[in-house]
Length: 294
Image (tube, rainbow, N blue to C red; front, side, top):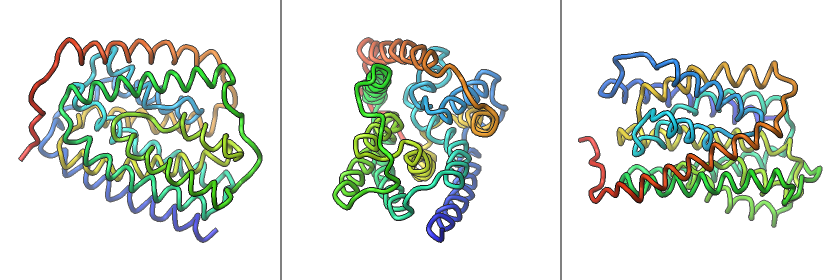
């Protein structure tokens, strides 16, 4: 109980620091206009689906690519920053409602934050073409994981609310890597759920770990994207303003949806967006890296 309460306090404090950093960073960026309706709508839909277990990174990337919302080099930073506060809301819901071993919870969240901080340092320096290739690869990986899940290719999980020491070490290493990969726009939800299922954990117990990790590593990495100026503040604000009510509607009001049909639709859209992203990287190579603001 003490560890869980401490995590909630840390989550709140980090959110306040994150918001202050965003306000400061936005002073020199695109802060003159409110988000467009499409930007807020993308936030609502993607975070609604994320709360129900579909994920948000692949769906947001697909929507951004299909509707040409932000430049590719700012796509990852915009997603990470814009989804951070909605995921904080998710984390609060799942940390309060779902039981899980607090030691396992805290340690996995910690390593994911370390991974995200390292990964963000790399991602904020990548040129446009490298980002396009990374995102396209991540989208294809996301579509593959979703497809395997739909076909029942990996275990549905066990009943454990904790992990043995050996399994915890495995989970820590993987979570560190997933935190770093998240900063390249490669969503962590699907591989995390597969990991915990293979380790015999109750899938419900995986949610507070995933949401807690997701919230903290997104904010930690987001601060580095803010410093580098590699995000669209207007579009990110749209994700946040639309995403928070999306989370609340999904987490508190919606009891059932035809998720099977939704996942098949998401797989198709994500695969299409992946093809578009890879095509952009191949057809429009960029030789110079994107300069960082002074």
